[in-house]
Length: 233
Image 1 (tube, one colour):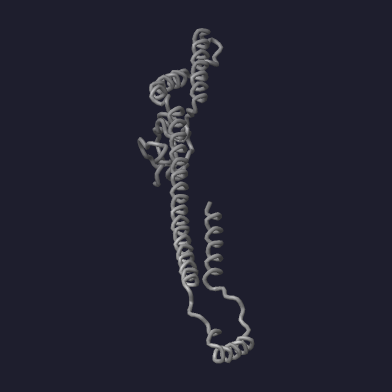
Image 2 (spheres, rainbow, N blue to C red; image 1 turned 180 degrees about the vertical axis):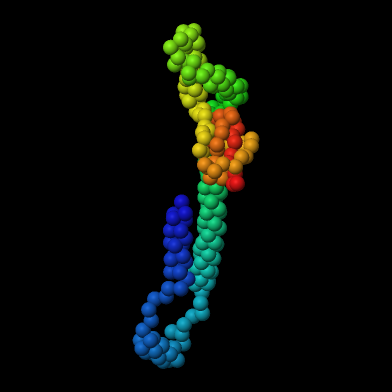
């Protein structure tokens, strides 16, 4: 639309220039000759003298001036409309960009709501996972590998291990992973230091003991891991 307005303005300017400024070419030598002849004829014949300009010539000149003014007004109006169209185009682009941002934010909010909807329920199950882990650690390996080991103890241990594995599998299906291991570099964003002890076998700031595992869901910390950290001697 802006191109069509510019083209119309260009055409009107050309018409305006032709009506206002173009004049037929004049032969100066011929003009002087005929002017001299006319002067002689006019002096000899009073009836051949030029008559004063009539009313039709005056009206034609006024019409030409009026047409030129109209052309100028039309060009001005077209320029104003072109400015208005450019402003409307800019506003339209801004509105479209804002609508796209709103759609992206809404889409992200819906995705986050779906992803993190299980957070309260998962936090309630973390204690179950902790208790299963403590129960498995409470059974000494010697008691399981001894020749006189109780079959019921082995069966109970195996059942607890299977239950923990199934629970962790369900966690993984919902994007929940656990972390925390001895030897990890201490990260205050993921770990909670419960104590610090000097350790000649580890660099300062190294996890040397894990008292409670941590869990993440997506890119969020569901629960920080509680650990012991080595410090410089």
